[in-house]
Image (cartoon, rainbow, N blue to C red; front, side, top):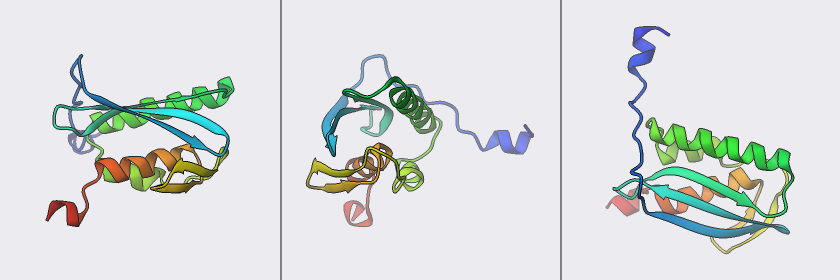
Length: 129
């Protein structure tokens, strides 16, 4: 890696060993899951965990890999808005209606998580005003 490319990488910001978190129960179609968001001291998200009930080992493994990569990206400086832009709208099963009136339909688990993060952790222009 060139020195110029390396300079663009933020140092990793590690979460404290005791941290606040939010756990959110959700469903997409007939699939239930729990999203846990670990928070930095300033309230910004720093890690994600998703636990789906009754999912096979392949989907569970892929979701855990996504959570680890998403968490590391946040810890290395990816903003929640940038993360949302990359994962919102991804399409794969399970998809369909949700139990969340703020997100009535999701095109995948990743779409749902991105939209949840957007609703709860991305400042909009009206929030900042």
